[in-house]
Length: 372
Image (cartoon, rainbow, N blue to C red; front, side):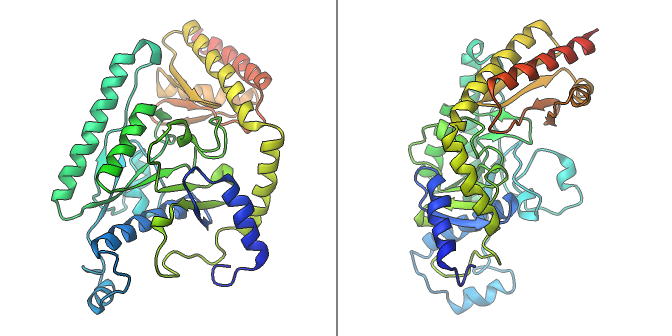
């Protein structure tokens, strides 16, 4: 499919993938899954960095080609990708090097010693902790810039920054619009490629097809990765990050072609039934309900947060979190755990306000049972 695409495949690429592309993205490369999407996104950052180092020269020297085969410079340069503490991007060796959510993911695996910086940890409710959270944003942005300065003095300059709009596996940690605008500004200031990993957040449950579009970024990401709810995996990117040589990023079937056919029908359904608006409305009911339950069961649950139906709260202990998951399952509701002691909700795009009410009722029953 990569070397000899037929007309039908090209039509799906343009009428399906590009129809749902994030703002500013004019290139698409389909992938099988989120992991291979993120892994190849990092490769695009390295290629872009080295292209700038060569001054735009597209032909490789004999030394560059030969040293590549020995895993040595200049063909195999010493570069790095900066990531955020608490983030998760995949389980390959490269992606474990930029993941920092659970030790079990990486134990026994030799990873690359790439830099990690702080992601905000807010106090909730947000409206009662404006000053603290603003200071937290500034602290994290200062830490990001200091980390870039420090790393670039070492022998492995930063070629890319990878970040999730919401740190999902790490505990559903959110960053504010101000924080992400700061990350966008810093990446652009230092000429570092910015990858936004939308593998978990893309697809519409935040009320927008792409979560980062909530942040009104001035420059925007250079690369956006996706999978899961989008059915197919893939990499959106700016033309500036398109490799000059064919075959530098390739896979056998260019992702999973039959999933693109399915995505075509899903996108029609999303538009016809206004699923993005539904996610906003249902999310509002869900989050308001969680905040009310916080007041009723003070000390057991806290820090309710969310965008659209992408909602979460923290429990007072891991034991409480695990009890909640099991008791809700017995009531017919599947919820998930993440981070240290967080409950996360991941309903489908047909999840309506009436469903949110039902979930909240069952959650209240379970919390009442646990509290007694």
